[in-house]
Amino acid sequence: MKTTKLKISLLFSLALTVVLLVAAVTTKAADSTSEITNVTLTEDGVLSWEGDAPCYEIYLRSEDDNESFYLENGKKSVNLNDEFFNFTSMNQVTIYAKVDRDTQYNPIVHYDLYFAYDDTSANPVYTVTQPSGTITDVVLEKDGNVTWNSDALWFYTTSDGTVSYPSTRKYDTVDDFLYRNSGDVVEYSIVSTLEAGHYTPGELAAPLDKYSFYVKRDTTGADPVYTVVEPIEPLDIEVGISVAEGVDVKADSEHVSLKGYSLITAFPSEKPDGFDEEYLEPLNAGEWYYVALELAAADGYFFNDGITVNVNGGEGEYEIDQANVGKRNSTIVVYTKVKATGAEQSTLSFTGVENIEAVTKNVGESVTLPVVTKDGYDFSKWVVVDTDGKEVEGAQSYNEGATFTFGTDDCILKAVWTEKEAPVIKGNVDETPKTGDTSALYLFAVLMAISAVAVTVSGKKIKVR
Image 1 (cartoon, helix red, strand yellow):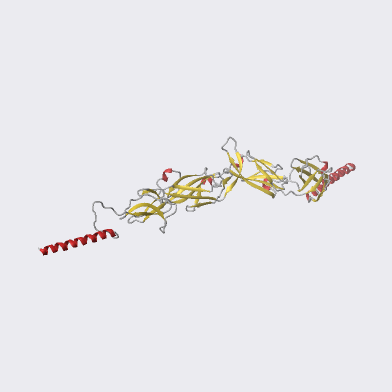
Image 2 (image 1 turned 90 degrees about the vertical axis):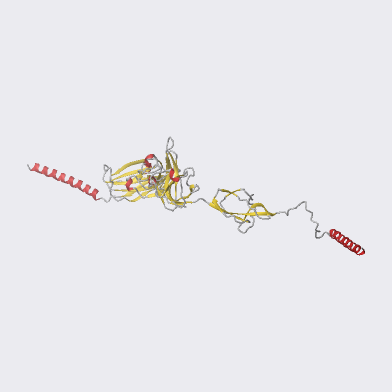
């Protein structure tokens, strides 16, 4: 009986000891700080560290490969040369401190180390380093494939709220999925990071570098075509309405395709719900009209969300069509308000003649020049003179009754005259000697003398009788 009691007592003591030992080990693991300190990597590839975790998992990552293995029984060193691993120029090793090998998730702590690998010599050389993360040589193909270069190991891409999971790939694809909540254009970003692969997308490590650009999708062909585009900011347009010429629109031809933009219509008084060309006729000078303009971005550009529009010639205020609000677009509709002006006019006035009033007409209209008279003069022509009355050199001259067409500048026409010659009367001889004719004077004197002698002789004869 005593022997049985002794055996039971011994078994109980042994069981209690085992329980206490397990509890001690468990408590030690639970209480372990598991800090990973004094991490070193020698040039010949020996990685070592200090810590009190019972188990460690080593994870090697490069651009082309990844590998993991466990170190148990407190082992805290490994020779990387012993691993069959595809090392590249930039590599990463992560040391996970774990409670045990079976714990797949939630390691106690982890430590990341980046190193360069040089195998140009007989013996590979390992160097602890830190990637700059600078992203270069970004290329977007027409089919949506994107490639880039960087010394970073981890990358993720973003596009209007969509975030990809970190990867060591240096390529990605822009596809139709990215355009589901946007217009024709999305902002696409490539982000390099020290992401070690143990974060979720919502817990991304701070970026090393970020390269962003805008991608336009063209679906007019059999297959979508993707191109890099730049935002137009601001958009400069000039709008004018005249009674004579209707609506005139000018835009920045470098950024806005002249073939792609057109006037939709003009509306009096209030902004319309639709478009109606009948509103274009008639236009009244001095009235305000709403103008709806459909503009297309030139190749390589797009209209960004929140674009600023400078309207020159209008009221200055504008509104973006609701279909374009909150999106990036290749085409955009802009409403603005413009006052209609009268037709452009010029004035024709006259000088060198009396009682002819000036005439004002629309540019391009014509009048027949008047037929004018002046006593003692003949009309020669109309000539163009300046405000000082001097003839304008090289200007056109006009005959009376000619057609004059109004240009953009006012014009003064001066009448040119020539004096008439004195008339010659035939059939009546004037016997009166003319001044300067001395021969006639001599003849006149001789005749007077003969007449006097005749009178004297005649008188003497009378006395004799």
